[in-house]
Image (cartoon, rainbow, N blue to C red):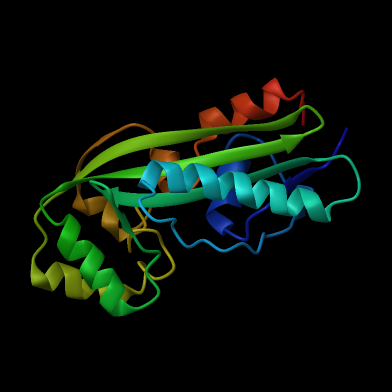
Length: 190
């Protein structure tokens, strides 16, 4: 059996793989430029980055393997929200999404002996109207840092969601159903 290499350092993606009975043989994060292209939509960005991550790691691996990569992008309309790195970015994202709907796009890509296969999964969510106190408390928790759109649905932000249409695990960082379909379609049996 060829090894499964996860092209991500995200512990959430490792956990999601474990939920479907998979454990990567190696974790080898990619190092690519994640800057959106001019006029690129959130969906296009998620797809392009997941493919680029898988291909970048595939170029480093000398033995045959299954290389799995993913990228999650949050969008409000055509606007791409950042992976929040500061409290100010978390605040800006939450204020923008407060009382509004947004979409989370997770691209998943697999490089295998059969080639490259990829999908983008879209999930629609609506947040309740957030008070200044709720935003301040969430920022103080530190949960939103390093996360697309400035929040993690698997934590305190789950209480912000009025409704979700799509894939919960995709919002966390890996669409488990689609990931398993890609792996099985490429012949992975682990």
